[in-house]
Image 1 (spheres, rainbow, N blue to C red):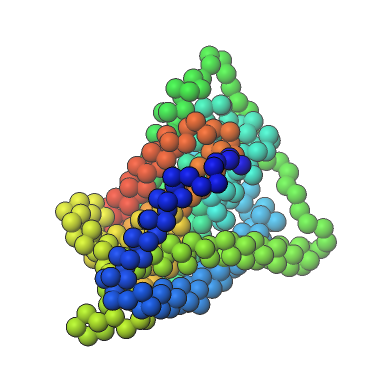
Image 2: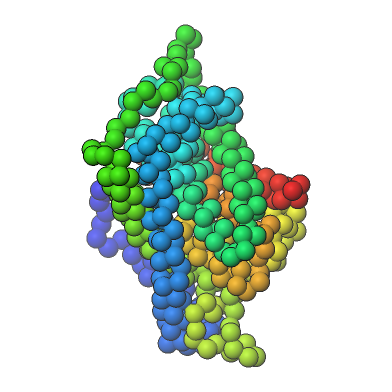
Length: 378
């Protein structure tokens, strides 16, 4: 941990920023008391109606992922996908295991693989740093997809979510390929340098007991991991999403009056969306300016962004095309600003962090554009 003087210039700066932020919001809303009432109501509603729903989906998805892992389904998928990974990503077939594990769980799952020598032996030095971009492109994919499908009880969002997943694949290709362009300059491939080519794992670890016992233990262990993911998104949803809600929606009362209820705000982001509409509409086809809040929030926490999508849908501000774009950009960006730095540090590649962030920013934009085009085609 780094050390700094107990009181420094940044101490005064942060006080000024916080003071100005709350003063500005209170001035717009009418009073500081009303502002805090709105903040508390919004955070409370997000906790009850969004966080617990995401946690429930995470538990079920975690249980399914653990069951697949226990009985070799993940390794079967790995073997099926491996042959197309090399031409698509210029990565060894073993990278497909990274895609599957992060899709079924979250971004940092790639780190546990990257620390396993039996996994990294398949990679050349310049390919390893790109694992961060690959893993982040699919983080929380299953949870996000299941949540987006659940937003429409009649299943009308299934096609949009599937096309959004394809858009995320496009975004991952762009991100990884750009990152490899940078890493080749840092770790130029040596003549004759090769990695292990047989990327198929012949054995896997299993739990003790008969089949029924293994099924139950896998489901329960997977469910526990889902609870951990659900708990880990609580700060992001309550803090980031509350702030974004304050900046997205306006007053609920007649004649622009504030009632002190959840999801009221000063509607700054829609104005920003209107200014950028000439870019956003042709690229992403957003139904309303408020939709810009989702990709912005995804940068910090896709869990928080998921909470936004339900509110936007209830207010009639988004439709199926937006869900496709949200799925693609949400999966690709999935909180990469909050995880990329730590993941690159864990890989020992801190010097390439800026390159990884730049590559992934472009990848996320391409994912949204691809999802938009796919929706137009289908």
